[in-house]
Amino acid sequence: MSLESIEVFSESKLATLISEFAVYLEMGIGVLSLLGVYFVFTESMTLKKEIRESKQLIETLSHKNLLSKSNREEFWNGVKEQFRKWNYTETESEIATYLLRGFSNQQIAGTRGTSLRTIETQAYSVYQKSGTRGKLDFIAYFILPLLPDEE
Picture 1 (cartoon, one colour):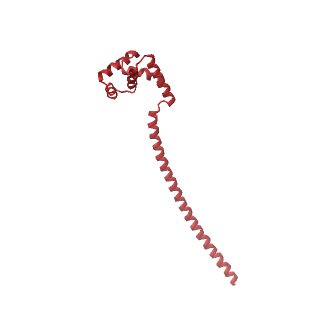
Picture 2: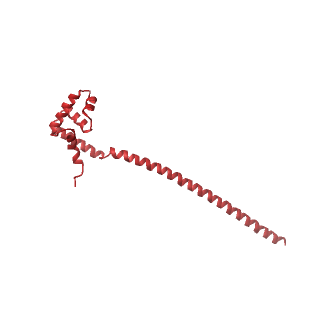
Picture 3: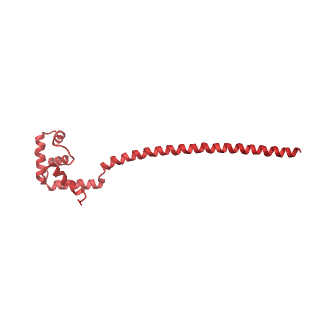
């Protein structure tokens, strides 16, 4: 009789241990699930931030890099070659560069430390030698070839 009671006691003790193990296992799985959700959440927030920063960077760079570096160098070399063909003096080339960059005559005068009248005379000379009628026409001479043809 004592052996039977030991077997029953052992089976009930084993059942209790298995039951407790199952509870702890479920709690562990629950904790790991919560940690997984937290990890996914933090990663998604980090990725959202990185995507936002990347979009801002792309926006900033897209304006600066309308042309690749090699294309910009090629473009600038073409501009300088055209200045040589028009027989610009060094000063006229400098004034023409400021004009292409969108500087006003007043800004050029301030930058170069000369009078507005001097800059107006030099700009007029730039336009005359290039065969253009003014600043917009001068800039368009260089920009239009970069634009797609009208349909």
